[in-house]
Length: 162
Image (tube, rainbow, N blue to C red; front, side):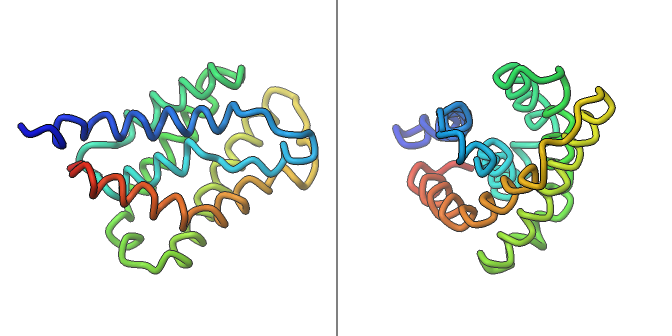
């Protein structure tokens, strides 16, 4: 195993750590409602790029870590990210051939479903939705998807992550 291949697994882990750090990064109050769903986008990328290596179990585990980080009900994000992983794995071959703009629209749709699951769980707990800006993270994630895709693809190619 050469030196580049020995770092391949760490690229995936480092990308998830970066997503968690971006999720925890403090933002001004006006920007909180616009925070992209970093962890879900990174999960979607790796499920599309490496469907045999990253799957529903990874989505569930990452979701549990996100629940702990955010202080939400244990399993809330885990359910949503496991569903995202399932949908991405199910349709990864169709989505991979789309242009980045079309992929961004698909990402927005999947993340709107993720936000709906979060809203549904919060509703079952008796927590009312904040307001219409609850849906904005899916839109900002859609706008950032092409750049995130290009960065992760270049890292995957540079370190030969397979």
